[in-house]
Length: 215
Image 1 (tube, rainbow, N blue to C red):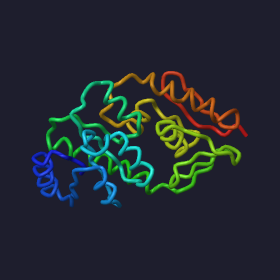
Image 2: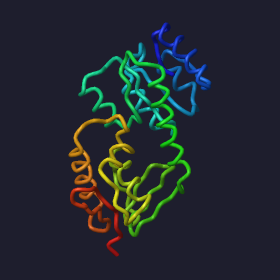
Image 3: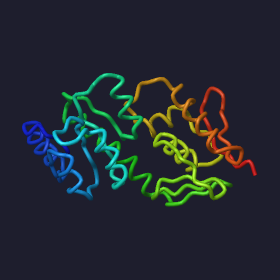
Image 4: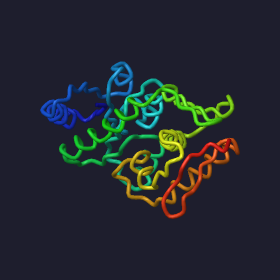
């Protein structure tokens, strides 16, 4: 838990211990990086030595741990920005401990299902390395944003099957996301341009998408 407010950190630390977690609490970005590896990160954005957004980007580079942003920055723009960065969830202060724990458990369940999947996935010309979080088409690496990677990785888990927009929202943006599903179409359109004709993401009108092998 990265939280520089000592009163909040102390209270939440005790609450998480009562829920069966073994929290490590730090108050700076430097201490957060020194505390790795961990299984889960609760990240405040308002830190004294470094902006939390910068720390989040660094955590994503060096750790596979899920991240929930826990912050007082509660505007819709802040929440969208945090989730678009690739956060697994976004919780605005003040919050209830039971709600936070429920969100943590939901993220851990999703992370567990990802960890149980094979490290590599091939669908025709498409190759996904889940450990490295990379996407290749015909051996050429495709530069994907975190959300684009999450979408193609989720579709590739069950190629040929229709994945609903709601399933994509829940998996990629989190079950608490209440924005428009049009956001998915924008990201899928960007993915199609990057992946080219060798990889096909079909739109199933009124339902969602499916990944097919055109070959």
